[in-house]
Structures are given as C-alpha cells and as structure tokens.
Length: 303
Image (tube, rainbow, N blue to C red; front, side, top):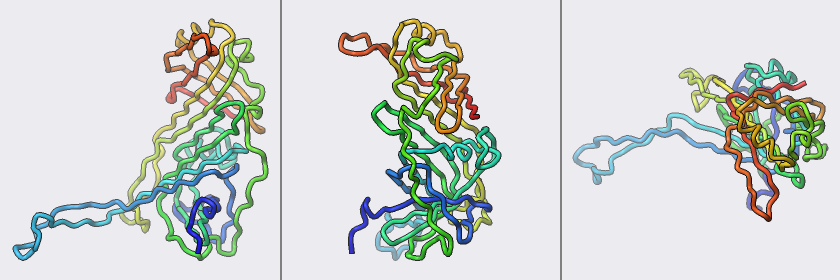
C-alpha cells in the first residue's frame, strides 16, 4: 500500500446546507471555481487539564492530573488558481448564493475531501475569509478561502455522496492580470492618474464567532455562527509615471477603483490609503509604491 502524499490527496468539493451542520442526503457536489493547489485541514480536540487529589496510595502525588475533552475545533483553507467569481455571494453573505450585493445571510456549506481511498466531510462550514491575489503580470491569480466548521465525520472508505455525484473539475483557464479589464483609478485610466497597475490583492474577512448550544449534537457544541462585521482591504502595487500621485495620496482623501473581471463589473470605493507611501528613488529601480486601503472603510459594489 502506498503512503498517502500530495499525489493521493485528490479532491475537495462542497455543497450548500439547508440545515446548518447537516450535509444534504445524496448530494450533487459542486467544484470550487479553479484548479486546486492546496488543502489545509486544521482539526483538534479542545481539552481541559486539571490537578486532582488521589490519596496517599498514589505512586506520584506531584503528577496527579486528568484531562477531559470538552469540544472540537475545525478550520479548512482551500487554495486554488481561480477561474470564476461564484464564491463572492457566499463570502459577502448575499441574499442568495447568486446575489452579489453584500448582505447578512449566511450560506453554510459541507466540504467533502478525498485522500487516497478515504473520504470525510466537514460540516457547517462558515465563510471566514477570501483573498484574491494577482501578484504580477507573470503569475496566475490565486484565491485562498478559509472556513470555520462545526464538525467533521471520521475518515472512511464509505463515500459521503451516497447515490449523488462528485463534482467535475473546472475547465476554464485561471485568471491572470490580463483578465482585469477596463481598470480605472478615480474614474480615469491609470496612466492618466500617473500610475501603471502592477499587482492587485483583494482581501475580504468576516468576523465570525461561534454560538455555542449545549443541546447541539456536534462534538464542538457549536449551534450557529454569528457574523459580527466585515472588512475589505485592497492592496495595489504601481509604477509611477509622475510624482503628483504621491501628493494626492498624502492628502488623505477617499479614492476608488473600477474594473471588470469575468462577467462582473467591480467598484471599490471609500479607499483610504493607510500605509505611508515609501518611494524608492535608487538609480537601479523603478519609481513605484504599494498602497493598502483601510479595511474597515472600504466598500464594494458588483454589477
């Protein structure tokens, strides 16, 4: 029998839950939108350890202690070379899983994993964060999704989908910087604003807290997720054509960017650049800088 390694960790897929923490019966599983390059499952028991008095006959009275399991924690991170934007309604808590306007409706999922010949399911997965990264013009875009989960089934050779079906791998090519079109900075093309766009990273994070329920059947005793707030941060790397943009950033005014990706038009507004713009003026380097927006202030609109 071969050792399980990266070649045998074959697949991750998901399905929406109608009841939080319950995987639908015989589901038709869905594929994450891109080429999977990494799956990280962090699971562990929550333990309470304490000292006890065991009496005079104990052979090691200074080491008297016990430990009891009180719950479980589960977190999953999926990394892929992304080729779609269908994940946005989930992370933005849209009214439905096809509504791109930000909202407050939770869309929990079950995530199925295949390693070797064994399967498991992480249930009640809440969407914690998504990071879309276009690092440069030579690298395909990466999407990193992180989930908090209520529970996990044991690894088994019994397939979790029952009489349902596994998802098919996406066939679309991953996004690159060329996939970003009609980019505008403050309603004009970047070169008019004295900049060339060289990299773009968008980070969306939900402040998600577990709601514990003593009557929950899950080992974690989590009965629900509470989404308290959301932050969105834009990191934009640029080369400078003129130095006026440096003064403009220091003014502390709000900015915005617009672009099209896939079939959607994006607008990020209320961008307040929070980092002190360091400008490298050495003789062997281009003049440029990387800007980071205030995650609490940034707003998104998708059409």
